[in-house]
Image (cartoon, one colour):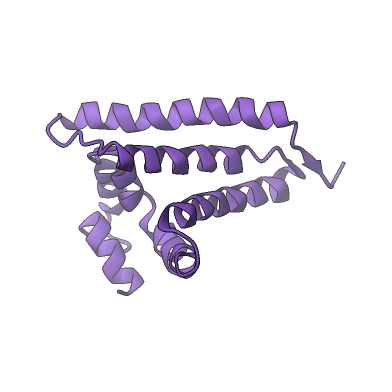
Length: 152
């Protein structure tokens, strides 16, 4: 599947369509569970993470570990951007994505399914999971006192 096909499948509209962002947000936030949220969120980034990280790792590690590694890798990319712009990072994003990847596995294990609920309930649920995960990640990164500073 090409990137263009993948984006159209996830957003329902082609890359660059004026409604692309709105459809992306609507589908991601209103996903039936936290695992499905990630199928829709940022389809371009998701396409490359799936193709270049998740699938190759899945050849020699279990799917669940491959998923966690992919999430942590994504967090490391975000932390690298933070490092480049601020000159330091606390690895907040790596911790956050580790926690969110773990929540994806947990939601799959318990077969979370909010499909029968209204969109607003599904979106609040997905946003709540992200917020709680961020809070845990903040305290985890602070308690580990992980901080790199290259430009100070």
